[in-house]
Length: 42
Image (cartoon, rainbow, N blue to C red; front, top):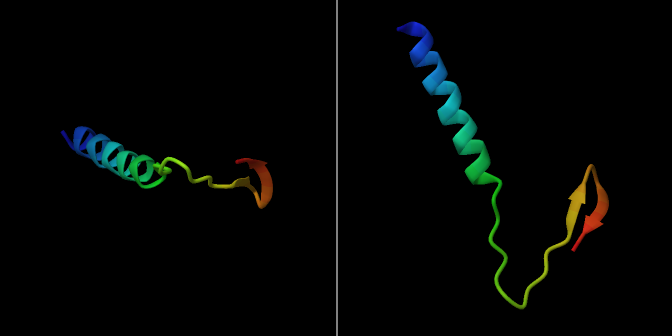
């Protein structure tokens, strides 16, 4: 039972991290994407 609770907490944290990192860019706007401080793509 304890393992199920821990698994649920881990899944909840993972879901929060994924949702907080998704950005919706409005049409006619461009965002610059950097990975480790270097330009990757617009």
